[in-house]
Length: 259
View 1 (cartoon, rainbow, N blue to C red):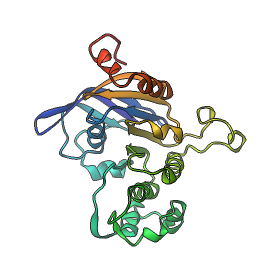
View 2: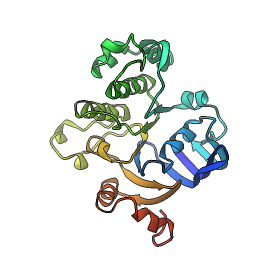
View 3: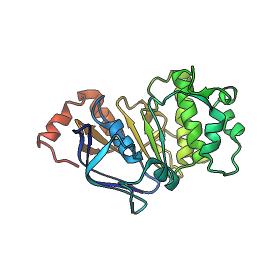
């Protein structure tokens, strides 16, 4: 679904990502850990094609096509969707109208989608105007539900969300990704659920809280703009919780093999 080949990116002449290699298969969910300022958001913005993030080396391959130089709207039309950590407020544009644009003309019941997210009463508010952190996250997910992208990019979905909203947001993300547990396994632990995988996804996080609600297939760590350490996301989170991100320094210094 997505492959990054030796991707090096700069902003205003400064390297923010260096030699990034990454692959996400069809139906696969990858969670990317990293401390604040490690380049996680820059990676998502680069994949989405925002012009501020200049690719100086490498390629972005989506569905077998080189999209390195495609504009944002072309990538969205091809099936990439993104939920921002801090989306802008857009005065003069109702959320309902923005969600309608996300449907690409498909016959989608916006009211029904909004009801699932407890967002119906906010549909006619200007986009993100005066909304709480949890309400903004729900608005972002509502747009993704309407867009139905093949590759879902989620930037810190648990950031700024209270306990009342995090479970709803987690369940909604699973629904967007097509990761609904079968009824027979409804009472098993999150790690043991056998899930129907449809969409591919990339979630970035520095706390890992989202893994309590959305099980990922694999994990990686991004540290100081470089990719290091890959494996089971739950095991990676456990190691981070015990030792912090300082272990990544050892990896980057060559004491462990880059994965």
